[in-house]
Image (cartoon, rainbow, N blue to C red; front, side, top):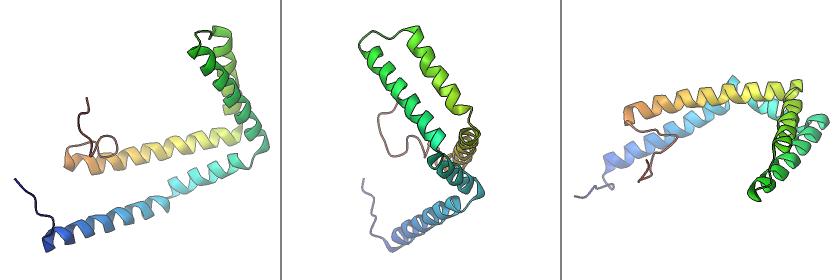
Length: 133
């Protein structure tokens, strides 16, 4: 069985799909949800206190990961990581970022479902692969 992809109709359809995909990407980038996320991300990047707390959290998280791999992770170290994360997320700029990120993720999941349903495949998750469980 062979699928001929050089047919003019197939090529035109493929071109139309690519055009629609590009238009969808541009529409997402122009959406208020995406703009809110980008603005929140930029605000976090420009906030010195947030950057300091991110560095502290990442340092503790890395130390915990190394200790865990070595079989030396303990409850106290994990609690320090959790406390640093809570401290980080207590900043209003981080709260806005997390909310904007969650909203964008929800929106993208809705779009994924709209694309996936007619294809009967999780377009954003497993499309194009084989041997998935």
